[in-house]
Image 1 (tube, rainbow, N blue to C red):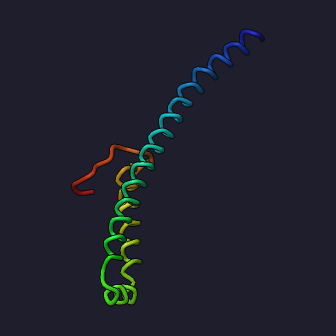
Image 2: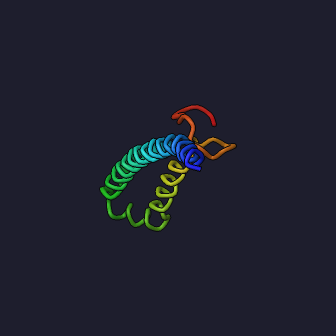
Length: 104
């Protein structure tokens, strides 16, 4: 009985430890990627809106009427979604190598 329990716990350790390391690596990749993409998009959004708000007040009124700020936010959201989809495998939904240019 002790032999079976020892074998079971050893097998469990052999199976769980690599899975745990893969999980930690995956979470690290997600953290670094999220931080980088979030920083890049927040800086780009701040740059665009800072320069947009430096326009004359008549232009800002027209921009408010056509909801250009909403359009810019939609574009930034689409860029983030495209970056996420580029990094995913179609069959499994897992991450793959990120392609920063070219066709899908």
